[in-house]
Image 1 (cartoon, rainbow, N blue to C red):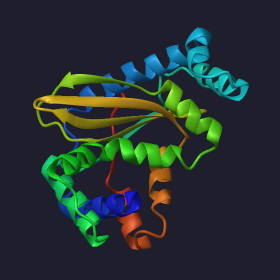
Image 2: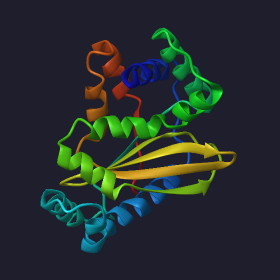
Image 3: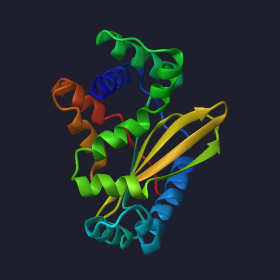
Image 4: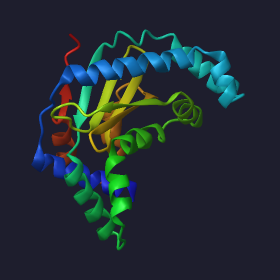
Length: 214
């Protein structure tokens, strides 16, 4: 079901298109959350609260050694607005013979950016999936002008950080950051392999926009 929702979302994005507004706002919030991820990864006491696994501790140590204040690139996949996302969810569920309440539709629509990141991390190792769960962190903000939901990918030499920006309430938006594999936006497209024609996948890559680092 998740893949059907994501596939419908991606297909509609080809028709809708959108421009990234206020790049510095997304980058500012993303870098702040990335810094928090690094601090949590380096905190042995914090990790011990959640896990006793030495594999996760080693993965966290490796992650914490990256300078998360200095990404080598930043890109963002812009998603449709709230009402369009709700329409996508309804169409995908209806195509599967199901139905949703208004509350469930809204919950799924608002969660689409986080779903994309979760779907990507679920394709990695169990250790990586656990690490992304332990270190995942978020924050809520007053909704800035011209806000659009999406996924910001902060790329570093050895890793990446994914930041999912979503609507969360009237005039409130949220951002959730988690460790991600390098080349994560390409990974999202690969995760949809078989769900969309190759030509559509190629067009989707053009919807991933660069975010200036300065």
